[in-house]
Length: 370
Figure 1 (cartoon, rainbow, N blue to C red):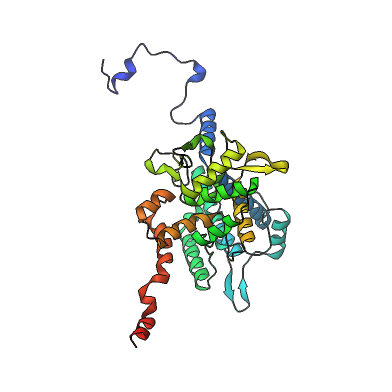
Figure 2: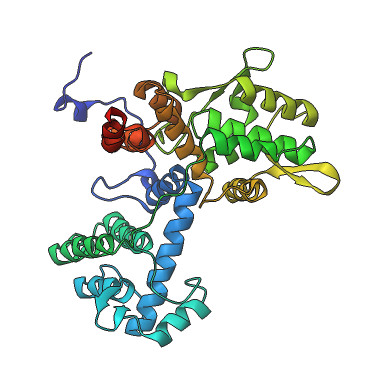
């Protein structure tokens, strides 16, 4: 029998729920709200949750010291404007200054709310405000961060930082030659074999993020040849919903496949995390953390003696930059990296091509003619 919406209320065979199970359609039950909170928390990355907690803790500390009481939402627009001028430097006849009182700055450091005295980086300021904005959005209260005065001040602040070259700079890229220098520091010890496999896995599979390397698990690794593998990256920053798509499959072949095969052979790993801590006596421990991946990259850079400001992200930017140098088609590069924005990848491509730009050698061409 076919029903329409008007007919549904006359269905007589529906089971009668217990009184305690009857819900009000206009409001969520307490249990449903807890379930929603749990799902939101589980669906967020650990790094993101940690950064949110740190930002909100800082807001609470700053607000308590500045206004003498606990922070409550919604926060007022004047409060957000005060936060900006407290933490953003401006140019005066006395040099760069900000409005955060020194005693409050010191109290924030002593309380563990910040690592060191002085104004925070521009990117950190923007992140703190973004987290506050998100908190208002989730509570469904008026958001002061969307106020026209706040947005205008942030826009002008960014321009001021840009004019004096104070915006954060990207980490240096580990392209093919620096990568080879890092690999040369990896001996045949257990730690050396792990680091060689890790560096090549991260770089050659498209420049994996440190969280993706730390989260690499044997259940997603498939051997397709003697030393060739396919790693299925089901979840990433650009595919947080875990959508099944062909570009999720990352080839680990050539030198990267050989290094991974050697690591798995010497350790006998068949389940669980691929890359793990190595304890005393060459005993394998738990899987690496994202912070440990960053430490490995920085330590290998130091051992190799290569100059520059490097981090784990340098493997990702280095892969994209090297792909641009070798004229790899943009689509193929993006399929490996997982980038969704063409502009993000083009930035690396253009940087890689800048030295070979013919317009940069016009004087050389004149000299050749002479």
